[in-house]
Length: 165
Image (cartoon, rainbow, N blue to C red; front, side, top):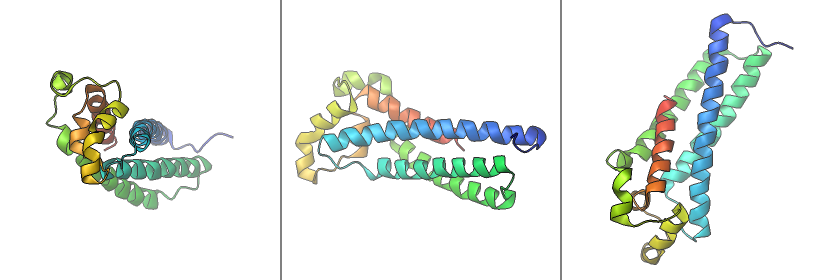
């Protein structure tokens, strides 16, 4: 059964939703990996990462539902436009919150300054000595500057969030 025939706009909607879903799934994968490594190290993940994961999971569900409704020809375009606007606001908040400290960081020189860790888990474990002083909570700004890999992955999350605008 072929989808609805809306011409070039319909094809554009399909391609944009596909690219949006790919970006969101990439953000979910990287963010979930960071949260998993922090939980394995008995640390509390920063609210920035938890919020990013929450917003992107909701956005993926929304993308899937709207694409299914579009394909069935039952998508109310005016309501979808309003919901897209609300989702845009949420993604902008995520991008600004994640990117605030990242915009000033130069990931290329972090390993020479902060030490060389193989993963975010190594960085969280190294920060573990300070976690008992602050109740096991990871400081987002210190964590992203702990190693080059973490910095680059967070910049990728930030970049994908900005690309969703």
